[in-house]
Structures are given as C-alpha cells and as structure tokens.
Amino acid sequence: PEAITVGELAKRMDEKGADLVKSLFKMGMAVTVNQTVDQDTAELLVTEFGHNIQRVSESDVEIGIEGDEDKDADLKPRPPVVTIMGHVDHGKTSLLDALRGTDVVAGEAGGITQHIGAYQVKTKEGTEITFLDTPGHEAFTAMRARGANVTDIVIIVVAANDGIMPQTIEAINHTKAAGVPMIIAINKMDAEGADAKNVRARLLEHEVVVEEMSGDVQDVEVSALKRTGLDELMEKITLQAELLELKANPDRAAEGTVIEAKLDKGRGPVATILVSRGTLKTGDIFVVGAESGKVRAMVNDKGEQVKEAGPSVPVEVLGLSGVPGAGDPLTVVPDEARAREVAEYRADVLQRARTTQTPTSVENMFSAMA
Ligand code: GTP
Ligand code: MG
Image (cartoon, helix red, strand yellow):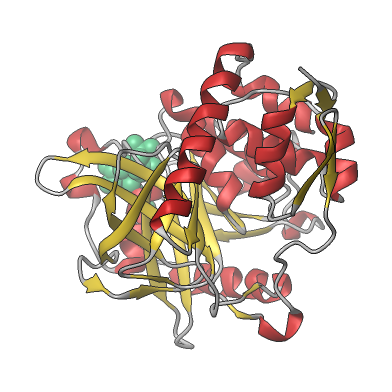
C-alpha cells in the first residue's frame, strides 16, 4: 500500500505536524512526524481536519483548499476550557469544589479522582469558564495528556506543604508539549509547613518562571479549604483567556471531543462531549469515533436536561450506538446513512491501523512532538 510521512501530509494540508500527530494519537496510533501512514489513514486525517479529499491517483492524496473553516465574521467569543492538573492529593478537586461551591471530593471513592469531570463556573462578570478536573494518580497519564489536548489553559495545582512532585512535573511537560499557557495555583497555603517561596524556586528547575521571578507564568496562592485566593485565581484565568481571544462559530453543525464515555446500566452508552464549535442539539445525527447516533437527550454539569450545547460547553449525550473512546471526535452529519457510512469507514481504518502500528508510550509521543 502507498504511504506518506506525517510531516509531508501536514505540509500538503498546511497544518502543523504536531497537530496531526496528536490526532493520530487520539485515534490510537503512536507515530512521529517522520513515520509514514497508509493512504486510508491519510484520508481519515484529511477528513478529520475538515479538508476535501481528491484522489488524483491511487498513489497520491491531494488536498482541496476549501475546507470548512469558519469565516471570521461568524466567530463569536466562547468560554475558555481550563484543565486542572497536578500531583495526587494536591487539592485539584477541592479547588474546583471551592470555585463551584460544591463538594465532589466527599463523594469520591477514597478521595481519588478516577475520571475527568467537566464543569462550568460563572465569573463575577457573568461569563463562563469550563473546567476539566483530572486525576493526579500516576496511573492516569493518558487522561492528563488528553486533558492538555482539548484545553486552552492549564492550572497546575501544587500543594505548598508538599512541593513539586512527579505528577506535577509530568503535568508541566504535557502542558508545554501541548503549547498551552499555564497558571500555577499554590494550594494548601493554610497548612503547616506551607512554603510558596520554595515552590516558586523549585519550578525554576523545570523552566517554569513565575512573574515574581521576572518570568511570564502567572501564579497565585490559594487555600481550597479556607477558600482564599479564589477571586484572584478566577481573575488570572479571565485575564489569560482574554489574551487568547477565544472564538468559535456557534451557528453550524456541531463538532466536539469525547471527554469520557461509559456504558450506563439504565441509560445505555453515555458520552461526555466538549463541544468545540457549532451547537449540538437534541435530534442531531452524529458520528463519534467509530460509533454513530442521534442525540436522544443531553444533560449538563448541573444534572439538568438541556436541548442545546454551544462551543466550550460540556454535556452528557445519550443516544449512541456504542461506547466511543475518550478523545474521539464527534461530528454532526446530515443524515443517518451518512453517519453509518463514516462510522464504518472509521472503524475499518482504525481496525487496520491498530493492527499495523507498534504502540509507543505516551512519554515517547510527547518527546517526539516537542
Ligand atoms: P486526586 O484527584 O486523587 O489526584 O486528588 P486531588 O488533587 O483532587 O486532591 P483532593 O481535592 O481530593 O484533596 C486531597 C486532600 O487534601 C483532601 O483531604 C483535602 O481535604 C485536602 N486539601 C485540599 N485542599 C486543601 C487546602 O487548601 N488546605 C488543606 N489543609 N487541605 C486541603
Ligand atoms: Mg481529584
């Protein structure tokens, strides 16, 4: 079969090689820009990136110039997607609880986060911020990598009484690899032995230079327990988000990403989708990974049924044919025939790709991308 390197394909698509590598990674293929993919995989990538495919000859993949990029005039401001990362027990979920005024930690088995929780919090100005919580446990590397991929800003939580730990460093590396700005939240300032100065100094060793040390990484001292520093944290997120000028077109067929998915005893396959552009509506027909479906119902982060979800909004979606993989893209399509066709095509390509690619570790992936 004909093959093309990821780097060459990226050049023809006028996309970044690292973005293609990330997409392939989400499909379960660990390849670097210098490695080749077969024609079917190349076509799949081209479709994922919204370009048109023209097969000029069996050996070539030509990319049409008109993709489905949104026009500037159609773009509207959207909420930032902020992922909370850090070492186990440094207070990620507590901090998010404090920001939301909830108590998720109390309901967690052993106080350990096992999945990515997605929530929206309103700022004082009335705008929304979308937060993704991640587990700090070392077993959950892939979830942190995934979190870094769909996010605009990462908050690295460091317990002031514990300092920089292995998953802190890992989170910093994921964030840098994803090219996303980070904000350091120095938590547990109320605890005995809390030493924010030491945290800042140790961050230097990992080339994270906070503002106080004349760098450009924002940092803020907080206590999730005593609920201090929270306003300042929200302000810093808002400031960072404003700099990014985040926009999306809400008036188009929706696209999004699976944050997590499971088979629910009562409700069948359920996926938490983070909408990236467009507006997802009940009744919409979609393809998600190698599955398809029709939105039967949507539930927001407050447990309420909703009929629509716009850009940066996380929703649980019911009505899937099966359980998709985390990180899988969701695309709304015109009709069920088209949905089945695309889903079958993707399943077929993924099946073949998985049997021909050698898996590498996530660490290799990121070093390959850097
Ligand atoms: P994982 O999800 O397992 O990685 O942990 P996490 O980072 O979400 O930590 P979590 O919020 O579950 O908090 C861990 C422990 O630290 C809990 O016992 C919290 O009560 C405690 N904790 C969190 N924030 C603070 C704080 O600001 N001060 C003090 N003293 N304790 C805190
Ligand atoms: Mg947690």
